[in-house]
Length: 155
Length: 283
Ligand SMILES: Cc1cc2nc3c(=O)[nH]c(=O)nc-3n(C[C@H](O)[C@H](O)[C@H](O)COP(=O)(O)OP(=O)(O)OC[C@H]3O[C@@H](n4cnc5c(N)ncnc54)[C@H](O)[C@@H]3O)c2cc1C
Ligand code: FES
Ligand code: FES
Image (cartoon, rainbow over all chains, first blue to last red; front, side, top):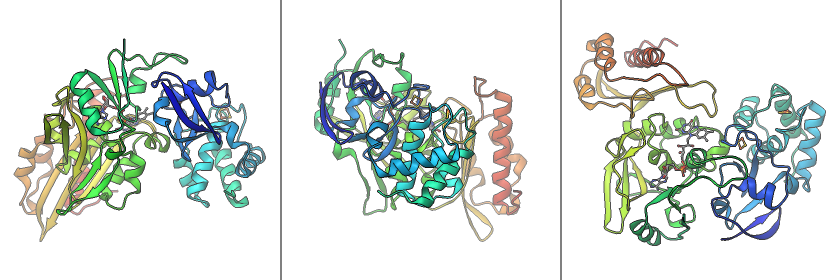
């Protein structure tokens, strides 16, 4: 079945089974490997992408559910000013170590800042609660989001 | 050969459902986990699949003339959380379901359809006598959520019926909600408790209790509730209420917890709730 959607600002039409995971379409069909697979069960957030600006777990989303929508992966987000602010805040604060969670963390961080430009620590922790990190212990990530918030994420 | 149907209207969906035995697929946050094989492989569906998220006419939250709120089947948790029409108690419970990422995908109707005793939204739905509207090509019927869910993964649903919407009553009680799990986000509930009450002139004029994850379905017992409704607060004996519920709460042991712990926690939450009603908050 031909699935039409906007991927990283480009209209695409991909002929795949409608039940195929968005994650597999991105990685195996579109060769966008910035989106990671951790658990494959919705628990870790490594596979986070934005659909119509909202973070979702692409391992649970069948491709049919993005029909007609706009999908942004870390590759598309890299082109934005917001990415520069958030990624340098992660670098400055040590918010990334092995980096496996980072694409998902950055997109989820963007999603919280978009809705709430000056979140409290607690609000950041709640917003990122679906994204696990095995390395940083989270405080460095919270600090990074706070720094990005101070610098201002221009949208 | 598995067929995948993607209707864009309810009418079309009902026709397909009448002619085919299908999985009804909404947000997929339960189904994709249940049917997942491994990365790169398609989910392992053993019968046809009816995707419903493209049925835009089922995406709504509306208030009717009687003040009841109608939530269409494809409405996701994030939309429910953001709506000013939704009573606070539902928002409180929904905000503790899974993670924001999951709530951007998952539907309330899917939580009912999954018929898990750990389904968190079922507590406020059952406590407040919410109903589901089931649609088929033969017409519609309305049934209370409490009666619709028969047990683990068991619904009073005919093969050609779909949940069209959920109807909730406006909020009118004071509530006490606790969810006990391992981790705040994404934990499958070990035990959950929702109590609702209303006090007028030291009299308990409404009293309701629901427990999650302690039986094959959410436990609510109106017979026990009626024993205490209209009693003076001073005549409510905590031990006697606990005694009434102790045999209704029949948890099992599984990988998340054991039955003794669950029973104990459930009863402690009930006691806490009763203390709060009687005016002696102990937190
Ligand atoms: C990481 C993670 C954490 C979670 N945490 C929680 C939690 O804290 N609390 C909780 O309660 N749940 C939790 N869940 C479970 C799940 O997110 C919810 O049950 C959700 O509400 C399901 O909605 P859905 O739209 O994704 O359902 P789907 O997976 O699409 O469907 C679920 C079931 O409902 C049926 N169904 C769906 N729509 C209809 C309809 N219109 N008519 C008839 N049947 C229908 C389907 O056939 C299926 O059997 C979690 C899931 C994950 C992956
Ligand atoms: S891979 Fe999707 S949440 Fe873990
Ligand atoms: S940096 Fe390694 S998992 Fe987060």
